[in-house]
Length: 127
Image (cartoon, rainbow, N blue to C red; front, side, top):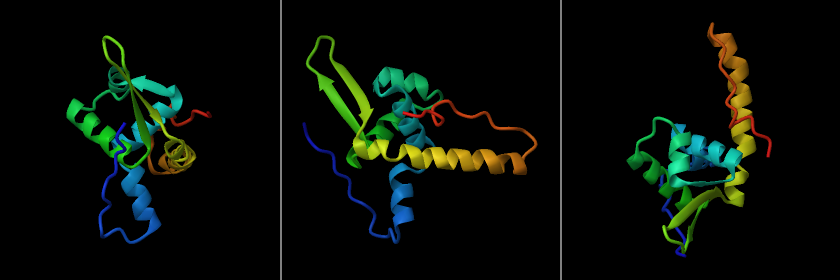
């Protein structure tokens, strides 16, 4: 199977920018959390877990995560064909970072807003 390899932007100046490029943003972090909670998912299962993501955005985001070595795509030679997505070891190492962000957000969101955020079951997963 071919290894995906993405070229990083030349203007990344620090490790924080690198990290946020790799796993930052709404969709990448959600995919990582969902795969952390469920371990292996087919595309259609992942799509259901992501709710309001479009197919084009999900496909592009998965491609980025595979190119960065965060997500693994495994094809099975079956009829009908079966493809599963899972986190790599590098991808799994991001989960505690996302959990820390989630905990921080839970504390400070309460201070900034009247409404309380509901803790995401995916982020709270302890695997």
